[in-house]
Amino acid sequence: MIVQHWIRSTLVGMGILGCMGILPDYDDTSAARAADSIGQSVDYFPDTIGTRWQYRGQISEGPLQTIENKYFSNVSSVTGTRTLKGGPTVSVFHDTNPGNHGPSDSFYRRDAAGIVYYGSEPGTPLEKQLVPYQIIRFPMTLSQSFQQFNRADIDFGSDIDGDGTNEHVDVEGHSTVLGQESITVPAGTYADAIRVEARMTLRIRLSSIDRTAVGTDVMTAWFAKGVGLVKYIERQELAALKDDRGNITDITEELEAVEVKSAPTLQGRSESAPQGLFADDTRGHELFQVLFSTGLRAHPR
Image (cartoon, rainbow, N blue to C red):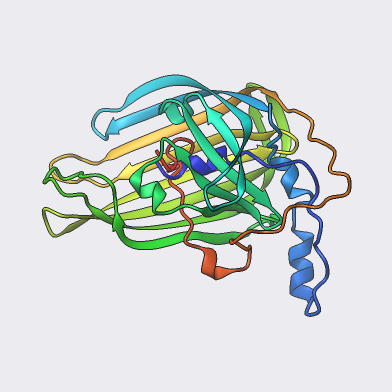
């Protein structure tokens, strides 16, 4: 469930992006893009310790011939920070039941280039081969799209055809800022929420037969300024393997209540410098998400 994890990337948000200077080759095209940029993008992703979101969710899943509906609740909160081994300091998000998958902790870092996902506990073998990857770029620009990851022939971490051997998979993911619109959820109505779509494709090569099973995960999420994630809808589909008709899962979570803690005074400091992954550095795009817990969430995604 790779796509769901970037949803909990509802982090970030205390401050304004500094350092957005004019480049020497600034032209009309650049000016047009700047006009479509979303001001103070980081304010849509609060990550102050103690901030807490409560969601109600619905999930419909099963083979296409038998769909089962379930209801669940999930509370997401920023519980602290952690310095990863040989890596940066990240924000820790704890979810009690994201996507109806049980409790998990997810790790994110926000810097001047955007938000990077560093994995989760518990994670999956597939996820561990993909992180870290970028889930949001700053500054956000309407109609902006970028490739998050593109990995070929990696261990799927599961034996789905039952022959005792894990399948291998090719995975590719993209993220797009679709626009701004009003969204109504149990917690209220939020004007000008940012709508973002994460789309992932998996091509799973079955080890028992010469065949490829295709899976897709498409998640649409809405983020409100000063609040964070207010709603997401996700559809996961897996083509038929043998005698079945394939599987489909629809997941929705909507905000019921939120408590956003005030960020400590920055005292003139700007966002942290990017570490390793830059918004315009194509070398760093071995990024991926299966937000099945919140998107093909990496689950879990």
